[in-house]
Amino acid sequence: MKVLVLGGDGYLGWPTAMSFASKGHDVVVLDNYLRRNMARETNSEALIHSQNLDERAELFFAMTGKRIEIIIGDCSRDRIMLEAVQKLTPDVVIHYAEQPSGPYSMRGFDEAKLTLDNNLGVTFNLIWAVIKYAPNCHIIKLGTMGEYGTPNIDIEEGWIEVTHNGRNDKFLYPRQAGSLYHTTKVLDTDLLWFYVRSYGIRVTDLMQGPVYGLSTEESDLDDRLLPNFHYDDIFGTVVNRFLVQAVADVPLTVYGKGGQTRGYLNLRDTLQCVELAMLNPPKNGELRIFNQFTELFSVNELAAKIQYVGNTMGLNVKIDKVSNPRKEAEEHYYNAKRDGLIELGLSPTLLTDDVISSMIEKVLLYKNLINIPKILPRVRWSGK
Image (cartoon, rainbow, N blue to C red; front, side):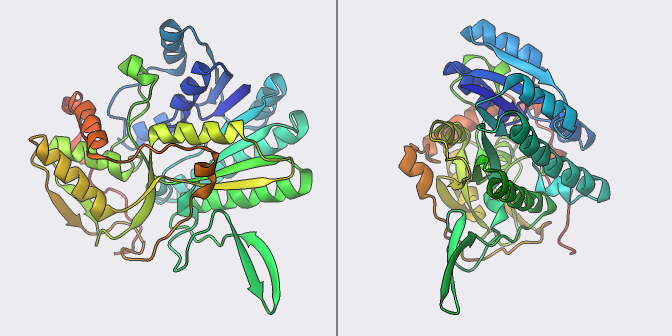
């Protein structure tokens, strides 16, 4: 297939580009280094320095003989998006090109405005580029389980059947996000659903849980192919932060009571899920939604697992409960469905002790690069 990866420099985008190119697809990456620039501006750079996209693509070709075409451009500028889709007429567009951080979106007006303008602007531009130049193209957009919030009922897979006053209908599952970033993802879903209904485009919306991990089959060839692994409080997901804290001898920072429960998955499983969605496309005029995670954990459970494995490896891992910088429920009901991708053949990589120890071993190689002040909470929106 001809695959266009928007946001292909990112933590998920670059591994996706390599994975699909390795499998023989024609892959083009479009990115403007927005996340790298935001990380620099907030002192939140990744643990391991990444070469630029052209350099990484050259290295990947030298290692595999597979090419990845690079386009440097801003997806939120309509002309760039329209020209890319017109030129490539892709079979599939993987949409990662959004500001991906809840804490960043809550830092202040400028960050909130960038998040709103970029995330909705890119999605809108992509929709119109597909309508105009590639109407049969399959859009795969990365959503987030954070769209749902923490309702006191089971979280269905995207849709819910409602009976009201004796009548039945099917609706998008109610969403109640906890940050502006997550709210833009809710708006993305609504925008896509409108254009699916109105123009008959086909879309898969992947409601992904927090991702952990720092290696894939392709990056195992050379550490210079590793993704942008963030461990800070703004761009680093909780498992990745805990792994680095364990190595750096910094107590694992559990926010508040630690009962916050979410669905998690390994980076390698993200690649599986996106590939399964691509190889099993929806019909034209269909918005298909999958809940993309493999296991449910509370923050307390994650901390205990990483503490146990770290201590068996000779690390002195402690846990410290700190004031929660976020406005969120710290104890709540959480039961989310995840049948769709399993039915398509997802084979989960579970968070076993061996998986945790292998990730810690990789982080240990870069221990001297850890910047401890980046780990601790720097952004608060709880009002406390």
